[in-house]
Amino acid sequence: MSVGHVSRIFESMGISTVCFFVKSFMHLIEQMKIPRTIVTNNFVGRTIGKPYDLSNQTNVVRQGIDLLSSATIQNSIKII
Amino acid sequence: MEKNKNTYESYNETLEEFKNSFFYGSRNNLFFKYLGGKNISENEFTIFIEELLNVIVDDIDKDEFSELKKLIFNSQIKGYLPKSKNDKYTYEDTPWTKFSKPLKESKLSLISAGGVFCKDDDPIQPRGMTQEDAINKISEFLRSPPTLAEIPNNISKEKLSIRHPGYDIRAAEKDPNVVFPYEILKNLHKEGVFASYTDNFYSFVGASQQSAIIKTYAPKWAQMLKSQNVDAVLLVAA
Image (cartoon, rainbow over all chains, first blue to last red):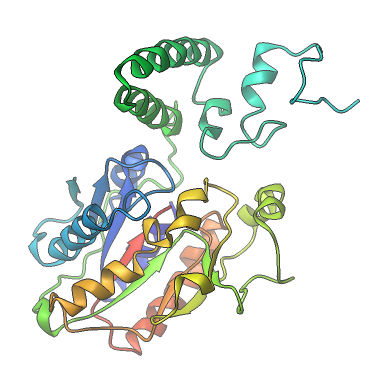
């Protein structure tokens, strides 16, 4: 929930954001109308991926950065 | 008399007490804490245990653990889903700052809610609080404002520490990138995906007083990042 709040405040103050959540928190993304979100099919506490899994971690972060510029609608959610 | 969970000594314990013990109780387990939470009923708990035992045997016979992972993953989703809607932080609007600058000209930063900090610059007083201490103080954390740890972008893994009362930190202790992808972000910068990043990256404990984040701290952090000409921030929930 805290990341959703930070995102909403940052956006209202002129900073674009992309949030990363695991699927277990999907309800928060919808409830809080978070601007741009990457949702990963990982366990809680492993949001970006498994330890040392450089390839998948890189893919997650890369897709998050891409979403910054590709998202055209508010509350954009990309599940990967 | 204190219960000894490591022996077969019998003592009276109801199923409810057994279940609840995983949520900040005698068997506290931050990975499985949702099993002891109110979103999982006693009946659902017993069904999960039964399925768990069956799936373990199936996976042993296959010599791989994909079904076990699937079962636990799905139970975690169910365990974190509230039974009733929380109206307190339900919003109808989405604040939006269009990202119009090309990435190759943009400056990015990173904030993680995973409780990452520099070992020699513990942001929480008194310094040196252990993970176990933090877990015991979960209620205190939830009532307290967040503290933002500044982490130099060239920090080495050996100098990082993680402490958070709300989630299982074992994966993050092995590789902080799982909640604080500082190395990944720098690798993508080297590839030329974006122009630059801030001198520091940041982290705080997400399990903090939400009203303080909204009213005071997030606006303060936004100002601090704007003064560094940041165009966009990656925010990682833990």
